[in-house]
Structure formats: structure tokens, C-alpha cells
Amino acid sequence: MPHTPAEPPVTDDAWVSALTERLSGCYGISAVKLAFLGGELDRNYRVSTTTGDLYLAKLQVRRESRTDKKWQDDILAHVADQDLAVAVPTVVPNNSGARSTVVDAGPGYGRLSVLNWVHGTELARVDDHSDDLLTELGATAARVTNALNGFPPSDLPTTHHWDITRSREAIQECIDADPYLAEEPYIHTVLQWFDEIEPLLSTLPPSVVHQDLNDNNVLIETRDGGDQAIAGVLDFNDALFSVRVAEVAIAGAYAMLRKDAPLAALGHVVAGYHGVNPLTEDELAVIYPMAVARLCVQALTWTTRGRTNPTAYGSMRMRHTLPTLQLVLTIHPDDARAHLNAVCGLSTSEKVQQK
Image (cartoon, rainbow, N blue to C red):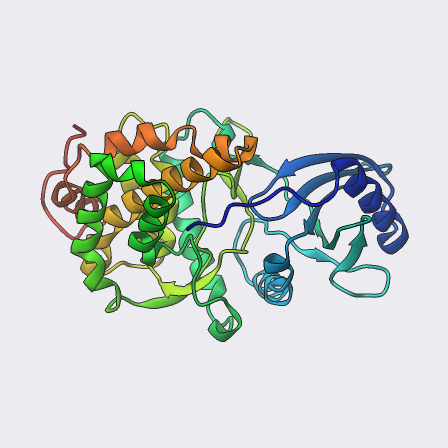
């Protein structure tokens, strides 16, 4: 059954008070405003200071997230030393030089990390995405893959609910939690498509991947002249040692949201990735079924969680997912594969028209 985040054991006021005290006493940061940003497992706050600076305060209040603290800090340090061409969060040490601080809020406690603020607007908050922006998104995904090269896979979790290579298990967990979902015909189509490509996954090039380049973890900016550009990448906490192609499949899945022509959007992302890290024909064959499976896991996870513990964060995360999923299921994987081959120059087939 997918993990259903429970509310922290203390009130928001108690956390905010304790957090403000720790920011001042342990970091020398005088906060004038804390804006709660939500989060799946942790509590994230935008910290505005008396000097006009901004920080991200991540408060890990659940035991399972606190135990992941070291590798999550290590991966940020690793990526900070790479040339990504976009901004990434960096850890701000406390006054003692430590990368985190315990926050005691009465009956509950958490572990605080302070990160430098990455400026930009979430992809999810921008109505229109240019073709060039989507191509740059794919290229950024490839550079993220390259930047993570050399990070020790043994330091990472072996899997988790959002592991795209185990989409069948994640979908089944959701069905087990909510048996009524088994009556939805679209789920069976998604599983059939995923089952057809799953045997290929073990043969594909492996890599450490970010594994969650969703439209809230990618920031954009509008430059002089009105051109959109990728400004930053957030949240490496779902990173795994997996198949390399997971990176572009996930980025492409979220790029299809809110698009009248989702396959065209996916094609731009894939072409951008291929221009930096050339994809094999087998990798191109699995991208579309994997992307569709990711959208299905997204829709079902937040549906099942919402029925037991509805949150504004969950509603936001799935608002556009099911409509997009229904649209992409009108496109056959063979047609999608031909289109992706074409945009990568691996086939002379005509680009598939959006149905």
C-alpha cells in the first residue's frame, strides 16, 4: 500500500516558532516571514529575511525521511561541483559547520536543513511552454544524468514508491489500497503497455538518475526578449541507481501535462536529451510506455491518498494528470515510438500526427 503521509504531531504554530528560533540561533538568519510550501514527506518553507535574502528550510519530521539525511546532503554537494548550466540547491551549514540541526517543537522533533534559494518559476505555474523550452528541458535532464555520474550508487535507496521501473508494483499497491480502481479500464491498458517493455529494462544502460524531474522540480525564467529558459532543478531526494532512460521518460511525462498535443511535447524533450546523450533504439522504445505508466502512478497515488488524507499538495499534484493520461492513451505505443525515432533522426518515418 502506498505510504500515506500523516500530519506532523504538532501544530503549524509550534513548528514555525521552533523553526524561527533555530534559524536565528543556529544559522544567524533573521526570518521575517515563513511561507509553507507543502511537501510529500517533509515540511518545506520559503524563508524571507530582514536582509532581503531567501532560503529554503526543509524540516524532516518523519523517521523515514530523517534516516535519509546524509546521502541527500551528499548528493547536493556532489551536484554542486558539476557544470549543469542551471542552478541547484546548495546546503547552508549552521554556525557549527554542520549540515543540519535538530528542531524540537514540544512532543515532536525534526531535522532542519537550510538551502540557498533557487530563483525561478515552477514549470507547473507557467501556462505555455515553448518548443525550445521543452527541448532545453530534455537537454537539462541529460546534463543532470551526466552530473550524477560518479555518485556512489551504494549510498542510495534501492527503490521506493516512485521508482519508475517498478510502476506495475506501484499501480498494484494503489489498487490494493482502493479495489474500486481495478474497474478502471485505462489502468489495464497502462499495465499492458508497461508489461510489454519491462523485459527490456534490465538490458538498458544504467545510471544514477534524479528520478523526479516533475513540473514542480524544474524552474524556468523569462529572459530579455521573452524567451523561456530552464533556470534551476530542485529536489534530488528521489534519486536512484536505475536505467538512464528513466530521467527523460519522467521529464517527458510531466511535459505532456496540459498539452493538446502531448506526443509532440514529449518528442521535444526526447530530442533535447538525445542531443546531449544519444539514446539507443531500445531506450527510445521504452520511453512512451514508461512515461504513461508514470502518469498513471501519479494519478492513482494521489487518488488513494486523497481518500484517506486529502491535502492541498496532493490535489495540486494530480489536477491535470488524469485528463492528460486519458489523452495519451489514444496514441498507440508503436506510433509514439516511430515519432520518437524520427525526432532523434533514427528513422525516416513520418512524424505521427496527434490523434
